[in-house]
Image: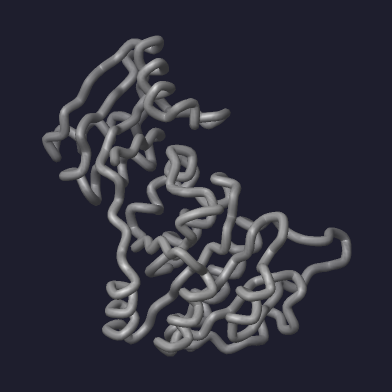
Length: 253
């Protein structure tokens, strides 16, 4: 199955990391920016076919292939059609865990908003997460919007789709990965817990958080301490804070 990726950052990273998967690069004529020039230059270096379209043709092309999944996001005058990114299997995940001295895994438990998923994937890539796991159904998948918001971060992450998050957490426990759920009702602050070399952070859905089975499968539920002014943070903001804090603590422990 093919994937459409738009936006200069997302396209540039895909061309840099896996040019062999790119079928074509489509550029809107009369668009000029330093980043777009960099995209065209790397496409030429990687010998990827480039097609120039006028505004009307470009926007029709991208609309048809994304089935309208652009929303209010700007395409920045460039898009690519590429082979879908490969997912790793559970057995490959186990091998990674067993062979690495340190591993950081992000588990997304049924997040539905593609903007939240994209923002979390971008943060995950920035702070050095190794693998992101998410369910095959009942959650936002890797849509063009997710790719755009992630701004190229997806290309630097291993991705694993699973049928059941609770089952995944049971495997991680078996493989000696400590799983922390991030929720405003957590008993301890993220700043109070020790972060081991092999750790997973689990982030629940925007509306309902964790279901009881997932919460019970975590080793511990932790929270971000807040003033009482607001009830909670947006899922991607809270998740990003947790990711960077755990990454720092894991690095210095």
